[in-house]
Image (cartoon, rainbow over all chains, first blue to last red; front, side, top):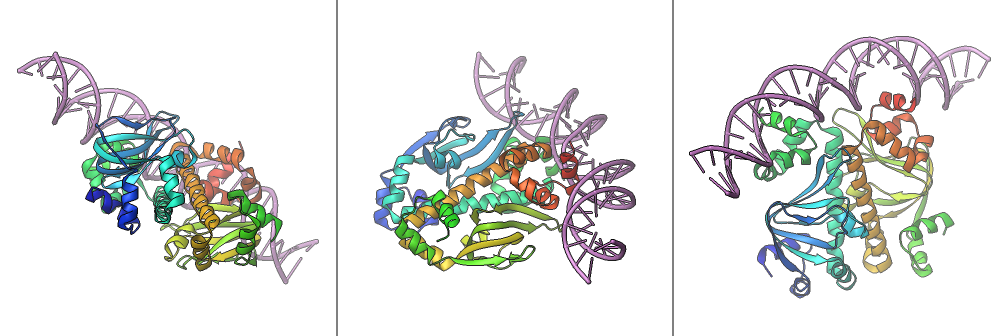
Length: 188
Length: 188
DNA sequence: TCTGTGCAATGACCTAAGTCAAAAAAATCA
DNA sequence: TGATTTTTTTGACTTAGGTCATTGCACAGA
């Protein structure tokens, strides 16, 4: 198993080598080109992803046609269109490949089988959900309490790589401001 | 075990009677008066709650001193200050008793012990996390794509009881609008 | 090298929703 | 029952940030 992938898994739960071995058989590597779409709106999300190189973002299109970025997986990172993955309903969110990306995926059936059969994997999934929840909680908090400028500054503190690496368009939609507003914020 | 509590648990996972029996020994009933505080800001949240009568809300105070309501537990309902409960760190959110309330609580230690020992309880916790996540996802979506009026109308569709039962102040902070704005929205 | 396409920067203007203040209505209490 | 507190409504005004339009820039393809 690739070292970076191992680190990614171990970051969440202290997997033993045997379980890692079992897990690694379920993971399929995949290469994706920048600007391709990993999951379209309306598709059921059937995979959970481990991004070892590149960048994938979760986003959706509002009724007004604006693109809204919900989450950014900048390698090394893991996640998926979680709501659709959980419910196995068509996804409102889609997965957009922001940069040339290498990732490993595990399909829903394997994921939930591991969840039943491997206590450490169940623990892993629980942790993932807990992390996803607390992350979102912070996101809501920053949306309702911070100004556009403060949200930008917070991102600059917490995850400057996102600002450095990605286009204004993506960063703006992640911060929930208009592109022009972000441009103005940056120039101060 | 009280019927309403049983229904609440069974709504999430199809518990068998034996497990329900085991669970019921961990639950402690409690009565709370309107306007009391179940958990203060800064306290570690040590309990998970099942509200069988009344109403509890999760909220926090922004830097500007505004009260922000994150979640409303209108009976029958379950939840807690989840971030603090998960991390066992001091809670940013507090739990406010909106109406005279009857609830059952299970403490962190018992909760996580059940999580280890009772597969159905582990399933229950997983479902709770999944539900909490998807709920928040919808909340973020409505915050970033809907106008104040649309958020109000959505709540009126999805959960009119909140609007009917609770004060404007609470509803406004839940919808993330100023009290005055909500009042104006209502009069249209 | 030219040319098209998309991203970034800047200016002018607009609007949804917030703030502040005061009156009106409703709930609480002695 | 009236007095006091709390909540709701309404009006006038402000503002953060959005929208629209224009220009400059950079990279990709022929």
